[in-house]
Amino acid sequence: MTTKIKQKQRQQRHKKVRAKIKGTKERPRLCVFKSNRHISAQIIDDEKRQTLVSVIDSEIKTKDKSKKTEIAEKLGELIAEKAKAKKIQKVVFDRAGYRYQGRVKALAEKARKGGLIF
Image 1 (cartoon, helix red, strand yellow):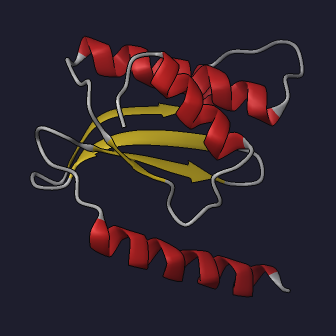
Image 2: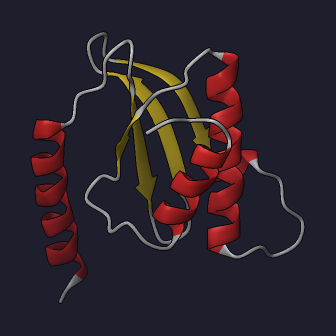
Protein backbone atom coordinates (compact mmCIF):
# COMPACT_ATOMS: atom_id res chain seq x y z
CA MET A 1 0.00 0.00 0.00
CA THR A 2 1.16 3.50 -0.66
CA THR A 3 1.74 5.98 2.13
CA LYS A 4 -1.12 8.27 1.07
CA ILE A 5 -3.64 5.41 1.22
CA LYS A 6 -2.41 4.41 4.69
CA GLN A 7 -2.67 8.01 5.91
CA LYS A 8 -6.19 8.33 4.52
CA GLN A 9 -7.28 5.09 6.19
CA ARG A 10 -5.84 6.22 9.54
CA GLN A 11 -7.63 9.55 9.25
CA GLN A 12 -10.91 7.75 8.56
CA ARG A 13 -10.39 5.52 11.63
CA HIS A 14 -9.57 8.62 13.67
CA LYS A 15 -12.80 10.34 12.59
CA LYS A 16 -14.84 7.30 13.68
CA VAL A 17 -13.12 7.22 17.06
CA ARG A 18 -13.47 11.00 17.57
CA ALA A 19 -17.20 10.77 16.91
CA LYS A 20 -17.48 8.63 20.04
CA ILE A 21 -14.81 10.16 22.31
CA LYS A 22 -15.25 13.59 23.85
CA GLY A 23 -12.96 15.27 26.34
CA THR A 24 -14.71 17.13 29.15
CA LYS A 25 -13.55 19.32 32.01
CA GLU A 26 -13.78 16.40 34.45
CA ARG A 27 -12.26 13.88 32.04
CA PRO A 28 -10.15 15.47 29.26
CA ARG A 29 -8.87 13.59 26.22
CA LEU A 30 -5.29 12.28 26.01
CA CYS A 31 -4.48 12.36 22.30
CA VAL A 32 -1.36 10.76 20.80
CA PHE A 33 0.28 11.70 17.49
CA LYS A 34 3.22 9.89 15.97
CA SER A 35 5.23 10.23 12.81
CA ASN A 36 8.19 8.23 11.61
CA ARG A 37 10.62 10.36 13.64
CA HIS A 38 8.61 12.00 16.42
CA ILE A 39 5.83 11.37 18.91
CA SER A 40 3.73 13.83 20.88
CA ALA A 41 0.80 13.79 23.28
CA GLN A 42 -1.75 16.34 24.42
CA ILE A 43 -4.43 16.51 27.07
CA ILE A 44 -7.35 18.41 25.57
CA ASP A 45 -10.62 19.82 26.93
CA ASP A 46 -12.96 19.55 23.91
CA GLU A 47 -15.73 21.60 25.50
CA LYS A 48 -13.50 24.70 25.71
CA ARG A 49 -11.36 23.60 22.73
CA GLN A 50 -8.27 24.12 24.82
CA THR A 51 -5.04 22.17 25.21
CA LEU A 52 -4.34 21.73 28.91
CA VAL A 53 -1.02 19.85 28.76
CA SER A 54 1.23 18.95 25.86
CA VAL A 55 4.55 17.15 25.47
CA ILE A 56 6.76 16.36 22.50
CA ASP A 57 9.83 14.17 22.23
CA SER A 58 12.14 17.16 21.67
CA GLU A 59 11.52 18.11 25.34
CA ILE A 60 13.44 15.00 26.33
CA LYS A 61 17.10 15.77 25.80
CA THR A 62 18.89 12.50 25.07
CA LYS A 63 22.53 12.37 24.15
CA ASP A 64 22.55 8.63 23.63
CA LYS A 65 20.59 7.07 20.80
CA SER A 66 17.49 5.79 22.54
CA LYS A 67 14.97 3.61 20.79
CA LYS A 68 11.66 5.13 19.79
CA THR A 69 9.72 3.06 22.33
CA GLU A 70 12.04 4.17 25.13
CA ILE A 71 11.43 7.81 24.18
CA ALA A 72 7.68 7.15 24.14
CA GLU A 73 7.93 5.66 27.65
CA LYS A 74 9.74 8.77 28.92
CA LEU A 75 7.08 10.91 27.25
CA GLY A 76 4.34 8.98 29.06
CA GLU A 77 6.01 9.63 32.40
CA LEU A 78 6.46 13.31 31.54
CA ILE A 79 2.82 13.87 30.56
CA ALA A 80 1.67 12.14 33.76
CA GLU A 81 3.85 14.49 35.82
CA LYS A 82 2.56 17.58 34.00
CA ALA A 83 -1.03 16.39 34.38
CA LYS A 84 -0.54 15.91 38.13
CA ALA A 85 0.78 19.46 38.36
CA LYS A 86 -2.46 20.68 36.70
CA LYS A 87 -4.49 18.39 39.02
CA ILE A 88 -5.70 16.11 36.22
CA GLN A 89 -6.17 12.48 37.24
CA LYS A 90 -8.75 10.95 34.90
CA VAL A 91 -8.50 11.11 31.11
CA VAL A 92 -10.02 9.47 28.05
CA PHE A 93 -7.37 7.84 25.83
CA ASP A 94 -7.49 8.72 22.12
CA ARG A 95 -5.06 6.66 20.08
CA ALA A 96 -5.90 8.69 16.94
CA GLY A 97 -6.48 5.73 14.65
CA TYR A 98 -3.14 4.08 15.43
CA ARG A 99 -2.92 0.49 16.60
CA TYR A 100 -2.47 -0.01 20.32
CA GLN A 101 1.04 -1.41 20.05
CA GLY A 102 4.63 -0.23 20.06
CA ARG A 103 5.12 3.45 20.86
CA VAL A 104 1.42 4.17 21.51
CA LYS A 105 1.19 1.30 23.99
CA ALA A 106 4.46 2.26 25.70
CA LEU A 107 3.30 5.86 26.16
CA ALA A 108 -0.10 4.77 27.51
CA GLU A 109 1.30 2.25 29.99
CA LYS A 110 3.84 4.69 31.43
CA ALA A 111 1.16 7.38 31.71
CA ARG A 112 -0.94 4.88 33.71
CA LYS A 113 2.01 4.05 35.95
CA GLY A 114 2.56 7.79 36.39
CA GLY A 115 -0.90 8.14 37.91
CA LEU A 116 -3.31 8.88 35.06
CA ILE A 117 -6.52 6.85 35.10
CA PHE A 118 -8.09 5.75 31.81
